[in-house]
Image (cartoon, rainbow over all chains, first blue to last red; front, side, top):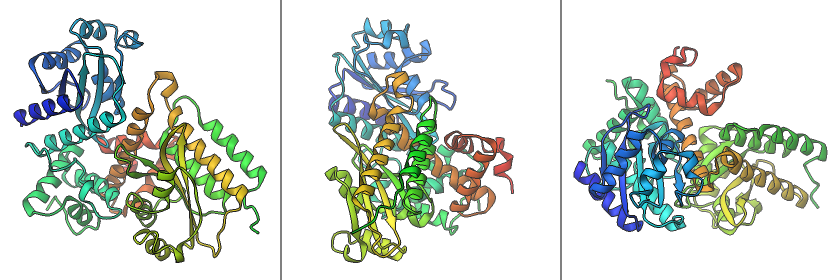
Length: 214
Length: 245
């Protein structure tokens, strides 16, 4: 999976004209976890904000929203007084952080670093969110599944099934007494092994035709 | 000739109530629910829903005056086709669409809406400056449930208030951007669905009943829906009132 994450970072970096792209997997509560990055210098940038305990990545994880910093010298120094000078000396001029999450299940953050100031274009923004979705799917499945679609499976869902998928996640979480992320992993593994669509599995769970604790 | 449904006094009360809600740290989903609920009241209890576009331009359900599985499906179908998608794409309202004659226009949506007991439908774009961010949906079960021109203006004004609320939440304090706001809002809706599932399982009830239980708990303890949904999905045992039968 580590190699898959690195490939994902490299692909995202190229598509987004980034100087580097990194992923940090975090435990609930924001303790640091594994990092992956497009290159060694970016990996050190990922580790830096965890060491410093501040930065767009950490704020994005906490707020569960993207944090977009098109110019690190504009307003950001007061928000992250240690982080900003540290990345600035390493040539970073813009940072865009995207949470890796599905609802309340928080897995980590994807950071896009750029050597030039300026906002992501609307297309680049959409692309970055899509890369983040693929990263979530890869993390949940534990293997590289670039190209198999986003984490919550809505691309192939039938009409009106999206809410059911999230409801099923909550149900399986309680059935198994595990975390929400673990419930998603189990549902996706079940769908994969049984060769069924994720939304079909979710519909069976919500209709109480399928339980995971028996 | 259609007579206006909305009275000026009721409308004034609604705007005051909404203004009161737009304080520092308000719960976005609750705000949108309030707005949908009050709009429904003004229109004599026609169901009202609010949808937001995700980054792919797909409309996702956010809040409704009456949230049940049947209505939820009608809202969600509209990420494929329907009045909300039309209003979102064109930036102009769809009003007084007769569902019995809309099967050609919306072959997926119209028969489902008719089956659910609705006769006509309206949709209003949620706009913010040049950007379109979603749509407000109004259903009517009455024959010829037509909106008068003045009502159309009023409902569009309420839809505009929903857009303003989206940008207000924390945005001004922290200098956040619209994209960040929308993404957070869409995710907070997912948390609520996950919480509904968790309570449905823990209590052995339907997801609709689970939502009723969660809202009742929020009201009686004066807690925000978003916070409670998050606690349910991350630390369910800390709320024995909700988690145990």
